[in-house]
Length: 130
Image: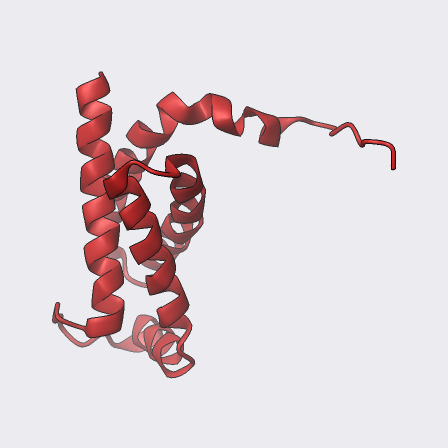
């Protein structure tokens, strides 16, 4: 199982590192996106919001590739991946297969680290006296 998790971590890191770099450099072309999806992507590009998202993807991808701060990378990419899935489900369903595969890789990497996230699921957190 350890080998599967390592392979999934490297693949996930490569996907987000390469696609994050593409947000800055634009070396991967694609067909023009039309309709609501095109308007959404256009406004993200015009406002430079894409740079922030691409930056998170590059940094988290590097964390996964170097096997450093993997829980932090998983949390950051969880938010990015949720937005990618929402975009494809609501605006561009034809592109949904890749985000589903990446989500599976994300779960394979995140599952062995679940004890790191357990404190986040406490119903009522104890507050420390000040």
